[in-house]
Image (cartoon, rainbow, N blue to C red; front, side, top):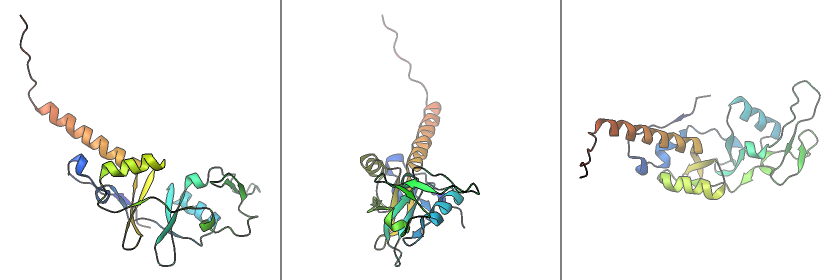
Length: 178
């Protein structure tokens, strides 16, 4: 799989958009994926969330580590894999008769377009208490992901740039008081 990379830009901080900050390519998983497969994918790819798509590639939900709050792994120790669903029910993956992720994902995820400003991205995350936004195009097809870490990285770059610029400017000397 190709490694996802965030986009870098030299634009002023407040002019940054989702297209400037998003990580692409975005990994997606079909809504029919089984819970065990989805958990393995998240762990293997070291990602904390992934858009869930229908047969036409349109985003129908998001599956995140928040949806898998507690795991008791089955790595040869004979224990069943369980997780706490978002509504609080303890689910044993092996005992579940219908364990496709479409039943456990967060449906109607918060999505944005590529031109959404950094301020609006941050506000949407704060308002929805989430850590990632799906950037969609062409009838709700996932195009990228902007995470809270992407926004923090942009803040850090802007702060470093401002610090460097302030070092290069002559310091103002105040008048002596009499």
